[in-house]
Length: 396
Image (tube, rainbow, N blue to C red):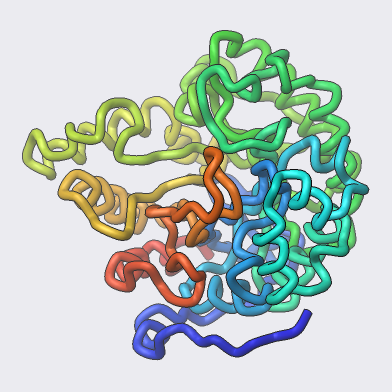
């Protein structure tokens, strides 16, 4: 890939550039912590979500910046890992399709031309080769990766009845899903930067049940662990990754226990309308919200000793372009609690915009950490508030 130097604002670097320490990989778990397998030292995940599961089946932003610049920006913003999303069909049905042809088929020839301008090799690659290229650049720059199975059929996620919500839905064939996970687990055995695999994003819909969740989490976890015993296994709960409370009665029994991490998502609008964040004094409201979150999901890391399982907040975020009072209150509450408990987390999202989303070309992303052109922070002051969450302050 050719590289064009397009640095972020120097003052932001002074605020946000955090030292990256090199940890021996792979990673494992020890009670509530993620640790490196060689020394047992705590490894803190402070990630950014990087979407790649939409119809184009390509990680976003390659039409706005050269790939090395995007990865450099991730580090400059203080993130040490990414949650890189993909669609099952990319692996099982479209792995050999060329990126350029997919964009042409979607009527995105002009977007393809921009990708060719910044990343000329990508348009001639297959989708899996392009995914590999992104992983390789992340590895070169010392950024860890959780590859997350976001959907089966490539599309924007997540609607209640989009056919991608739960096992057995129109596009969610469990056998094909397991095949896709296994193929990637084997493919990335020798890419140590791939430290984990997310089983499925935001399970939801009328079909969801505890028994089915247990069945397929166990099957998938075992399949991944056999294919690639190095990776962590991120298992999100039901109801849009907001509920794991059924595990209080009966914990999940696995053969990959020191690789299991539970995942949850939390936004201002999770478990109620966003406006509630302005309806009571913040201290009172924050305590109540955190108690509810711990009760439904976060109890997994509060259990004592060997009963504890690490928790990864795989999506948390607010719009950065114009921060509303409700969003500001939510972030103040979450950031304080996350820093106090030294949580592992992933900001939604990195992307300044999309190739194609909701039938629109070049759509902006108000939640994005980067600007529309992926060349500077969207809101430096908002990102600076994440700094305490990015630092490791607990664990050995």
